[in-house]
Amino acid sequence: MAFFDFFKSKKTTEKPLPPDGKEDRGFLVFENTGEVIQAETLLKQNDRLIRVMGPPPEIRQGCDLVIEFPLIEKLEILRILEEAKLPPLKMVPVSGPLLEPVDIFQVKDYGAHLMVRAANMKLTVNKKTLVIVNISGGGCPDVPYLGACMVGKTLAEAPSPREIGHTLCGYALQLAYEELRRRCFV
Image (cartoon, rainbow, N blue to C red; front, side, top):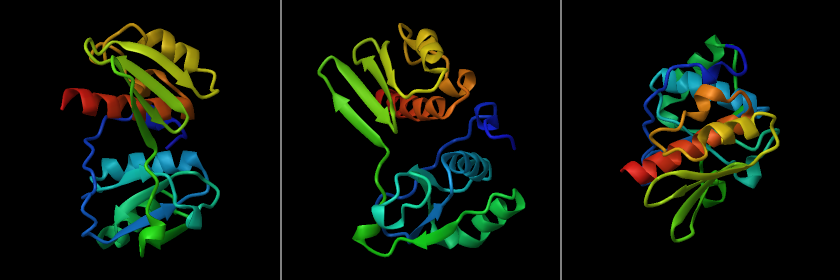
């Protein structure tokens, strides 16, 4: 799979991990963000229960993202990744509160507007109309294009960043877009 083929792949349904902490979890650590994105796409296409998170400082290595997964699925997840020639640098079990992942989302309510930040990208909507009023952050060359295509449109009308973006900033904006849609349409 080419580095940015995840933008063209079919949308998968996200099944979040249980938030109650009752299930033993682990992290997949990769060398770079591109590998995390490829692994996320591949594992979701194979209906694995995963989520991308920020790594705790104790295991940060090479990349500022990790994939959190249920440890019970370790062998199947490793098989999928190895068949795709995308093995992680390491797998780490979550064994205590110091190894809790960091959420990559930050949400700020400005009264009339709601902003979601995912990694380095921010997406802001008017809470009443759900019109996208601002896109900011990042330094990738397609950020102005993404803004021009999305600002002024509602969350329902705007194209998905995954469909029109081609960089890591586009990927981060897709995460913010999905989080805003989840918060506004639930």
